[in-house]
Image (tube, rainbow, N blue to C red; front, side, top):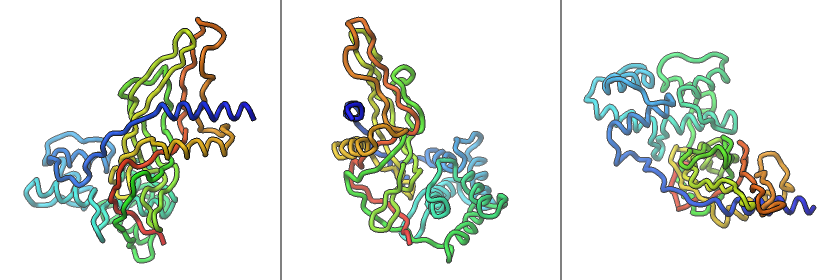
Length: 309
């Protein structure tokens, strides 16, 4: 029992050293250039920014999404496909939101792979083979398989400040290996529901950044690793700002205590303080991939969630 309590206190000490968040990026595209929008579309669909002339890249996107390039001025074409892929409005979910809806209803989680790959994986799950033609038509077929009428409801919902979100790390962290500025991939460990509306699906991607690294040293000085939490994506793809506040710290401590602080995925830290003498090095911080903890939303946020029947 004493050992379990010591581990809980160590978890508390580390959690209290993690702080901060950055403001969420704009999601509606109003302040972005055509190049910015194009890059976001490519990242969403393919996972990487493409190369080549702007007109060729836009034509490829239209062919992949609609089945054929559109005859129109270039800038309206970029705006059109950006709105289709990324922007959800009342009664008009984006391609990203549709993909999230199909994947979640079939697997009860979403994945962080590009939309093109996710659609192909869902087709294999439904029919055993990938589909052909534009992604728009293929996604429409998947919607008809996932929902009785091929439609689902998106609902504008307020996510209140300090809403709790359980997250897990997707990469290991170490005071020996991690560097200031390193990006830390996260994902939602559980769904966040509000009034029967799916706001943040399990598996939704999040992001943090290593803010400070203090190595262990002589005189028993323990290492320190500070993480600055950034955002997690809502069901409509909107980034929601997150941080580690008092509410999240208490929930994480409760989770650790309930689990006896010994379950896989919790923080595993060595003893704190001087060990055996003035010239013995302190302990390093090592956090395994899959470590879970709670965070909370930084502000009130309006997002479009998916009505769950």
